[in-house]
Image (cartoon, rainbow, N blue to C red; front, side, top):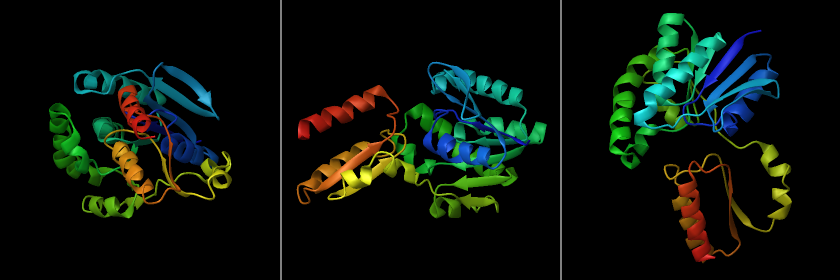
Length: 245
């Protein structure tokens, strides 16, 4: 059975796109799947017959080397035929696995990171600028496949590689059916977001926008489904909502 190992520096192993859409689809197709991601506390267990390895490391520049080293060691121990990585931070692991281990490499681009450079700290901005403008264009051509979440990003990365495939990050229909969302809000104009929630993804701006729209369209509803990336950002959003309700 062909082994696939997914590597993520910032996403939880049970992330919606990584685990519930991609890993479970690969498992259903007959692959042996391992997902390595950032999780507190650490875990190492099987969930739905998929191996989950959670490492507890902070994702910041000061601990970057420690994070990458642990991810690298776990990835090497899996010894998969295919490695599927999910952020620019882990690109150096992918480069090593491609050049020195001759592994099949899939690069999954969840968003166009150049657009969020202005919102990053100075240290992260310096690191991401180096990776996105120098490392990515040089090495993307050597990866076996690049997956993007939309055609717009795919068009950009086709400058570096011919093997680019957009796979939209739509929520599973189960999200709607299992919670009776369709029936509960059938009389409302619903705006729904499914995924990780952070400042960079515009969640706070989305909340403020829906508040403004609700003054003109009282039946509008915003549904946020997912985990906040930080408790601080979660508190900020809740405080704002409490003020306007």
